[in-house]
Image (cartoon, rainbow, N blue to C red):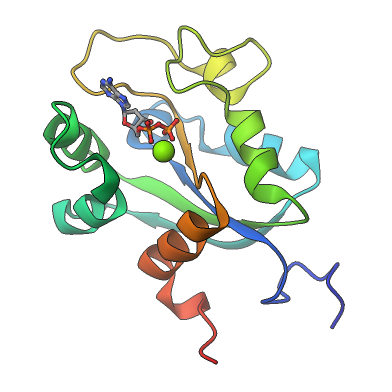
Length: 152
Ligand code: DAT
Ligand code: MG
């Protein structure tokens, strides 16, 4: 197996969540299309109606923020699609494709800039999540895709 094999467990990976707003609007395919068109590989993919507990763990860094509970309510409001995406520098690459957190400010051409907007909700609804570092990616992939984690 070479490192160009997307299923090589040593290749760089990131966790993408196509959030309930995007799922409900039928934008899952458009987000996946962009990721594949960029050249990254879909390593794992599933539709999940995430629990409050899973989301509290996923967003643990935001515990105590005023938007924490609204964020969990939004993220558990319907199904989402969880994806492990692989490729060289994919963590940085997907963050760049996503655009800024606030979809009004996100640049046109980015996923959030093209597909998201402000709906006046307590939690920002912005189409997509992507891990922000290698440490976050490892932690988040273990949380959402324990079956993909190779024990050493
Ligand atoms: P990102 O998703 O760009 O990494 P983040 O980790 O700071 O942003 O926040 C996680 C999510 O929480 C974000 O995608 C949308 C929501 N959020 C962030 N800041 C917010 C705020 N001030 N008010 C409401 N929702 C917010
Ligand atoms: Mg973040």
